[in-house]
Figure (cartoon, rainbow, N blue to C red):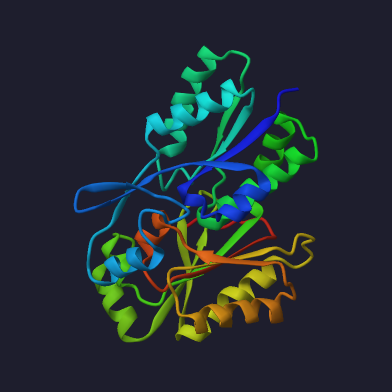
Length: 295
């Protein structure tokens, strides 16, 4: 049986320590600012998280691209030549065309290396949710599960990845075309904070609105706690878009208090999702009940 390598992309927000721990590779998307494309590195070697979020704060437009075909070709070829079968977990297909580009490139690579298997999978979860599914897949590989067994587990369980997100202002979602200008104006005026999930299609969908920043943070943690009831895997990922240390500490302590776990990973929301949600976004992820809502 050929060894299996798990590959994800810039949308997964997996820090280097976790990628190294679980032997996960990733392919890079790009950010675009002033018509210049820059690789969307999860290690922030081209610009820091603060530099990116300060650009957005200052009104600069930052957009993103999908994974280039050449990036896929280089990664898949390298791994095939090293003797690996590959499972690529992508940014959700409703948010990026990367999974389809990956499929086309994988077909070409498998024709050149017929002994290799390359599967491109839409995990229906962005950001650290995608990353957590990649970690689970890597753990299954380490346990000795076969290629088909890993794929079957992902297909059966990917909708159990729960995301609850809130933003400090609706302005950045307005700029990204996610909410109407009028909704952003009145929402900001009355201190409305949306609670956003990833639905059954991988689309980010607002499920409710609350008033006040701390109330919104409490709500995303409470909703995750409810979703995780009875779940054996107590790991929680907390992502933030350059929030204050006080806010980050608050959400971490809230997770410890309400969910009762110390298995918490905290990191920046990466450049791909960050370019849309903008500074101040906070999100929590964990395994739990199957997502059933369609936005």
